[in-house]
Length: 628
Ligand code: SPV
Ligand code: MN
Image (cartoon, rainbow, N blue to C red; front, top):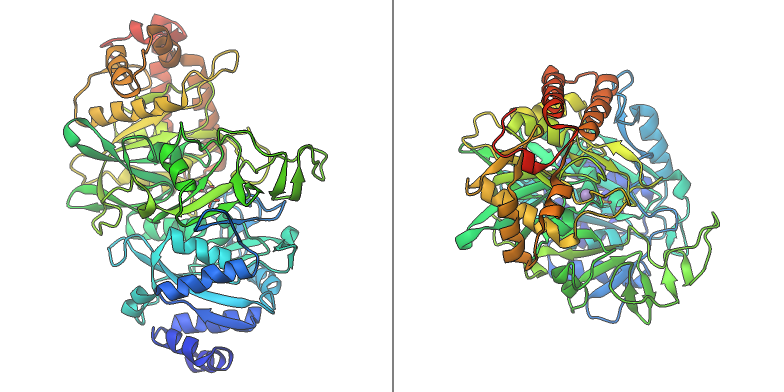
């Protein structure tokens, strides 16, 4: 078998690129590449090592093929995805499962044999006339216990270029693992192109083979569907983690800077487009990662790493006032790939950037002018709501020094937050680990956003903000999280945050900058430096502590009125939320651990008892010190 693969590769690759593959001495890898070459039939194959010359080749190819357009600032380029290819396609992303097996109703799958045939048929000759790029990356710090080597095959230099900004190099790592079969494989082709974008988007498929730890992706270009190491690898990693006793989470990792230069590391899980990157980039703090974390237990501590080393972030609302670090990066000479923004005069423009946008230019719909209508008759926005930027974290001023620490960082606190207009208070600490996992993480709901294709603003269940990526039965996934504190000396404190609370007139109850205060308060809680009020749903801040933090860090007077409006315990909404989430677990998660239902009952009783004594809407001033 391996000799057959070698023969194919020898015929199809130049001697130089053949040697690069052979040097790894891994038969599974050789078979994978040979099969992909035979199937997709590229005009040439370029095997990338970790050398700067190879990354330069990819960069140049992206410009030469027109997949990226150079902009007016050195290092900046722009890429466009097709009009109908602007977000993750959760409908066509499916697990390939053997006949008769299921991961539970809510995880979409397709019968493995039929699905594999379907996607391979779509990949047949899909790279004809184009160059195949084979590149190697590592998830997690290179050589660490967390690290997973990955190989990405793609005919999109934009995808390979983005990965060079987002992931640590892997070619030398592959040479070290030699014959080991333990790596992830990704095969992507953008398929036939029309005006530079995938023409057959209706045959877009992202099929995940959990047994083989490999993913096929075809007829799409959008990063979340194509960059294997991002959400495709997360799905593989969740299953691997469940097998091996660690966690793979949709989480940022950041250093929160407390008093006296103390740094406490936090992770935070938020559904896409709900403030995850903005939190990890908060002023005065340092970023380890903004999207995906692996957590392991080491010496009775919970440690975590950023799987990535770059950011593929939403650009909407990035401006010099709210996101000064990112804004500076996006306006300075360094390597940045913009996607689906508006281009005019070789400059990128996006929604919420803090200036007027030009009336014409080029965007994801082609030539654009104000008032241009889309096929559905709606006005086309100048830049897409899910337009993004891609850059490397070490290029940022606020890069945390522990980014590449092979030991990871020790986690002090975890925050869970969704898009919630009427229920949760802005910040609240769970009573303990199990309640945090169940009543905060597993109860996360969010209104859908432009990060995924489909209708926006629909409130949906989103366990740990990971619902799109969970690749094991959901009950088991929650149980793994519950069990993860076992043997940990001081489990991280768990918090919920809510940046999206609104009043009756639909007006946000908080400013964009307030999230800094919630995280600084949480940091003080980790070190027992502030007291808290016990409410039926968890511990919330005292007014005086918040007033001091607002004054000190935002130079803002925080009024008692604001505090009451924001931190009132909303009993009916909390009860409704428990009912909604319980329904999901009852009807859609057959393996729900009993502890979840027990905890829901306890939470419900606490809320009802409190309402009986204090009313349905309880001001925090009525609560100090009270225990329920
Ligand atoms: C998300 O949607 O959660 C992202 C971007 O982080 S994507 O690469 O599309 O997954
Ligand atoms: Mn994400």
